[in-house]
Amino acid sequence: MIAIPSPLRLRLDSDALVANWRWLAAQSGSAACGAAIKANGYGLGARDVMLRLVAAGCRDFFVANWIEAASLMPLPAGVSLSVLHGAGASDMIAARTLPARPVLNSMEQVARWREAGEGRPCDVMVDTGMNRLGLRIDEAMGGALDGLSIETLLSHLASADEDSAQNAQQLAAFRSLCHSVPARRYSLANSAAICLGPDYAFDLTRPGIALYGGMPREEATGHIRQVVYPEARVLQVRTVREGEAVGYGASWTAPRDSRVAIANMGYADGFLRCHAGTGAGATWQSHALRLIGRVSMDLIAFDVSDAGPVGEGDWLALDYDLPQVSTASGLSQYELLTGLGARFERRWM
Image (cartoon, rainbow, N blue to C red; front, side):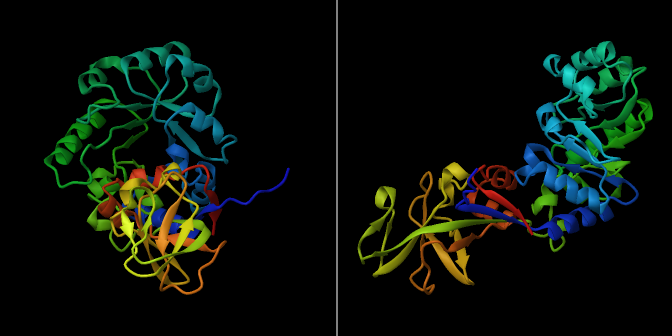
């Protein structure tokens, strides 16, 4: 089969990924530090992320569903994998055969696992205030979990990235659960909750966004490194005369005779139209380039008038510091990562 190079690529920094995990592990104190690798490792490639973190010492991983779990087989030796969406009726063949644990989220899932799980260990999510997935506290403490072999009892903070009274309320509720529901381990903290301090760590933390360069809270500033660097290939450099417009809607008009680079990227690749007008840009050989005009499905334009001899086939590195781009665009750091599409070639450095 002919190898066809992609006009889009993500440069992915292995050292930064590992450094981020090690910092989060240090903040977790005596608790083990796991990793959320759902949504294909937040868009980076779940298996590639897992193997790099396993080499660094991580042993506990979390995915959303059983398709994601199956894609990671075979697991490296000594690795624990949990499936956050639990065990639905259509999931039971996978749940009984794959070496991964369901995170049971409802009375129905608990009953299903009792009937068909053959006594195998499971994880359990209890809702302490988010009202998303999880058993209610009264259900968990009312005997519904009696006799289950619970590896990890989990809950999830709703407002860990904010200075909210809800954090302390959920922490108190989870502590009560820990005294009432036997499990081998207890886990509450995601990336942001790790930054709230050791009271939130319990036995296992499970960071996600911070592993990949996202800033969960101010406490992580200066410690979390950028991991993802999107790059797009130039298709054409054209001259735009003073007074002529670029792109749909003629939203940018050349204030002088200008050189404009058209790059092979657009909203079909996760670079959305909201980036236009935010001051978004890119670099070429250390020259700063400004995004101009509207973002199209497959194309974006940059003013390269002062950048030197940019030409067809050159690569432009997009500005993609997650906290900064999130603030400018209004997109969450999660959307910025997971939206980067399949047309990007993933290249680990």
